[in-house]
Amino acid sequence: MTAILAQAEGFFRDRGTGDGSCVERNGFCPSWIADNLDRYVGRPLLEHVELVVVSVTAGFAIAFALALLARRRRWLAAPIGQVTAVLYTIPSIAAFFLLLPFTGRGFLTAVIALTAYTLVILFRNIMTGLDNVPAEARDAGLGMGLTPRQLLWRVELPLAVPEIMAGLRIATTTTVGLATLAFFAGAGGLGETIYADLRFKSNVVMAGGVAVLLAVLADALLLGIQRLSTPWTRAVAR
Figure 1: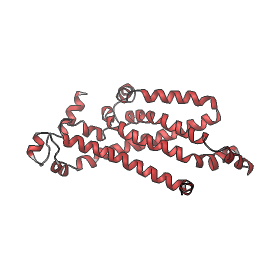
Figure 2: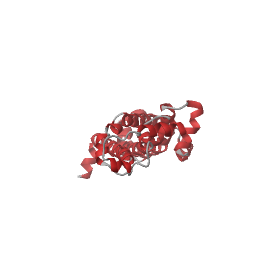
Figure 3: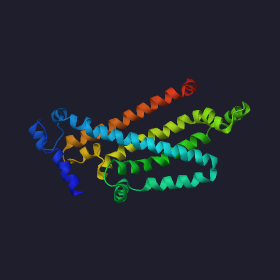
Figure 4: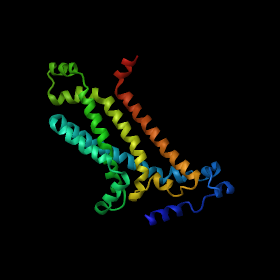
């Protein structure tokens, strides 16, 4: 931990060419931010985006497979839900350190922990979306001669998209926040920049602001995808 903090402090040892008095007071310095913008939108941001995309994608794939399994074997729904809920209650920093002896420091350790946190949200929303499909829609599909598999992919999943996308949006924005702690696992990201100098307001505001903006943009992107993939919901709203 000492080595991590020492390395992070070195990152901001030279604070650029902004307002000297403002920097010395560890205040909020717009000129310093303008001169050092590349420190936030470069490598740290790309690492953060990679952590979020890989973790949410892996979590969605696992949760989707578990949901389909639970649909076939209904008695598995409760145990799977309980296990994913327990994983979500483990403090993130503790999860990173618990994994270190097995996976070492780096990207893999962070992704395993972040993926585990997405499962409870994604699994529950996928199950809720499938369970909320109107019975008359299923009956209509069966009446058209669809097999159970065809019914799932052509009727149930399309109608469950709003709930599934809602879960994906929550999981993504949550992961953006949790990923700021991934630097404890040696995975970098915006968290490394935030903790580089907690006393310097410009650093904290800028790095934290980039993380918040990333969460907002990710949510907006997923909302747009949801609206494009469910045109019938817009028709009903009108």
